[in-house]
Image 1 (cartoon, helix red, strand yellow):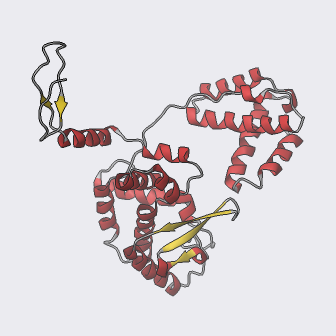
Image 2 (cartoon, one colour; image 1 turned 45 degrees about the horizontal axis):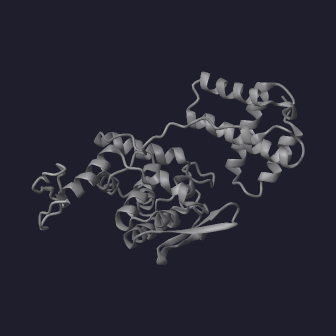
Length: 316
């Protein structure tokens, strides 16, 4: 079905505020929705949108994927309503509930074993692998941003790089350790000696001057995890791990927001959820810090008092 002119207009409106890959997702979702309903988008009803959501669920789309489709549709109709090209009450379009999941965080001891494993080789590809995961560990940067990092954005001697966001409108920096900078210098020397003149720090191995793909990074990590029998960690596990380490040091979500480059504090919240093992560790820490001492029972009301260690017993 031919794309609606209103969709094209909406995408042009969104183009200034969205990255190309995000814009593509909006376009593909709206095209799939239009193919499903087979009618003029300006004549769509709330029932049509509900039917589409049910179609996605029936076809085993994840709840998060279904929610993202509906969010794109709602954004489209909010724009159409503001332009006077739709009377659909967009505020009544409700996103389906998404099942909350606790992210898999890569532990320090696992990372250290992986880093030692990658340090065994001295070939260019070996150094590349080690540097990729050193940077993911040190910075918590998204793997999609890391593989697109260009050498011009890097200040090796100052241990940081500038990450461009939203078509260079916004910027934030990522920082790493001096040890990682030393590894980066070694890597860049090897890159130059091999005649690799790609602008990207991590160039594709196909010689097409493109950057390494996110899938390739995930493959590197999966292969190493299998060697040790570790769970199949995703590169994004490093980002969640960085957030947890920041919180462990400062306890401030504002620091997570600043270092990971989130737009809002709510974006940082999902990176700070504790899994069962972490919850046990935190609770046991405070149980160990406090000795529960029973006081003499108050005969009048039968209440017991719990007191920290080294404090006198009292009755209330």
